[in-house]
Image 1 (cartoon, rainbow, N blue to C red):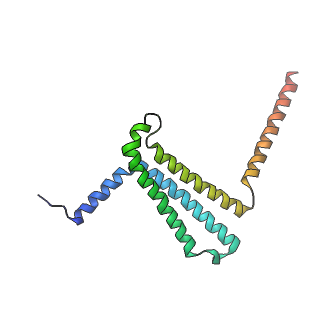
Image 2 (tube, rainbow, N blue to C red):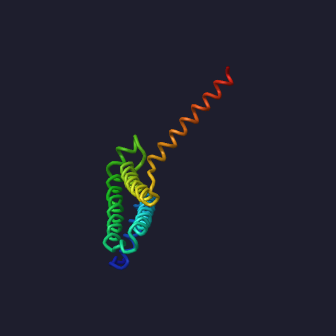
Image 3 (cartoon, rainbow, N blue to C red):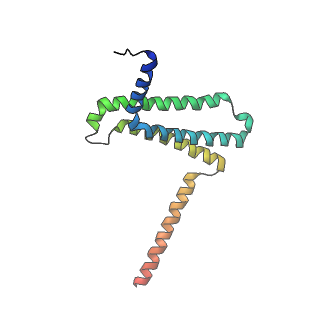
Length: 153
C-alpha cells in the first residue's frame, strides 16, 4: 500500500480543484478579459492625459488587488451555489444562478469603467451619442410613415 505524501498529494488536490471549478471557467476568463480591457483603457487614458509619469506601481497594484478580489468572489460563491443554492434555484433559474449573476455584475462594473475611460480618451459622451441616434431613428421612422401614408392616399 502506497502512502500519500505531500509531493504526490499536491497534484491530486490540484486536479480535483480544477475539475470542480470547470463549470465556471468561462466566468473566470470573461472577468479577466474585462479587467484587462479596463486596465489597457485606463493606462491609455492616463498616458494621454498626464504622460508616462502618471503610471505608478501603486496604481498597478490596485489592478492586481481587483483581479484577486473578483476571482475570490467567484471562487467562494461557486461552492455555495453548487452545494446549497443550486438545488433550490436550478428549478426556476439556470444552474449556478448566483455565481453567474455576480460575474455579470462584475463584468458590468468593468464595462462601465471602460466606457468612462473611452469617454475621457475620445472626449465624447456615449449617452449623448445614443440619445442622438434614437432621435435620428425616430425622425426616420416618422419620415417613413409620412411617405407610406402619401402612397396610400
